[in-house]
Image: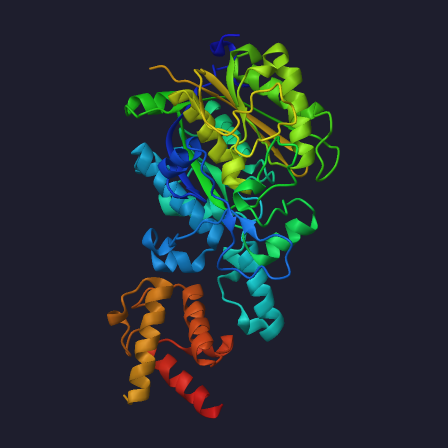
Length: 424
Length: 84
């Protein structure tokens, strides 16, 4: 299938969409370079939690964003009227635009959009405001409580800060949010609604309340004594995901716009598909029927077949159910190649950054294609499917022109992205 | 201006700078919050809220509406603190 044959509903050929900037804040710190460098060395961002009171909680580990002072990057008044996830999104967006060497001038403003989402929004700010309200009533609330706790702020504050006047929205699909935002941004550009879109996600739920809530839902690993070993995707000893904070924002751009300004292109967002399990709110369908459909549709959207895929960045949360179902889907889609195509879960190192995960993982998949280095799945000591290549422990070198990045959210939301090498 | 009010002014100036980004030196007694210092209505409420957090003095919204200048604010806080 030749890509020029894919036509938009209006009949014009779809534009190709490339990535020209990366902006990341992760448990490894501020910046894409520090994240990538840690990932390919098998480093872990998961530690004993510090600075919060975890007494009485069954979980005391996570991937915090430490040593991040938004005041270094943003005006004090902006920091004050916004909440933590918005701080992360704002700084990641700033980094991404800087990386893309893109200025938003009067001509670009109406043609640049924002699709940045969050899984849990400003939950810490809501909890704190709720406690203050319960204790002291109406006058205990800051006038910014209403606006700053709106879920849309991760997108609207970014749009306001950079001057984006194209379509801007917060789209949320729980753990798949980051990938969904990248995919929807790709569609906006393909259809000509925008020339550039800042796409991704941000979350910071490392608070006693959020950890307690997730632990009550039995979603989190309880391997508290050994932080580095706790996130164990595809390992038979896995017992849940490790909560992490972060933000990932990509600058997506139409091929035409990027070439006209001679931008440096990291790669192409070649395909995207979204499906829903409609099976259970938190458990994935055990056979992964809708997941398989998402993978196949995304590949078809990109105009490639499973044989051309050189790397899969798995959703791989390390929960018992996700990893089992994901393995089944990979086996079915890749058939005889399922035992050789490298499949790694970088959540083994970053933990689960919720809304940011799918966006950061899209960058990781793209970088694996660009560099030929595939990051490992650490802690994969006893793989559930010993015949598959989970890139256990250490990074591997593989030449891949196409990579797939999977993201599956609570609620049964499946978002699959296909990233492709860009040849000038 | 009494020393107490001087101190409060200095406090208030810092709060205005933090909330709205206006340099503290510009927060002078005769300045109007909205016209001279360009604070929007939410910022004014936030300034009052921050002052409340620091001093415990509540400024009910009806009273806040009548405060136009920095001096008005200082006078109100002093009056309320005195009656507490």
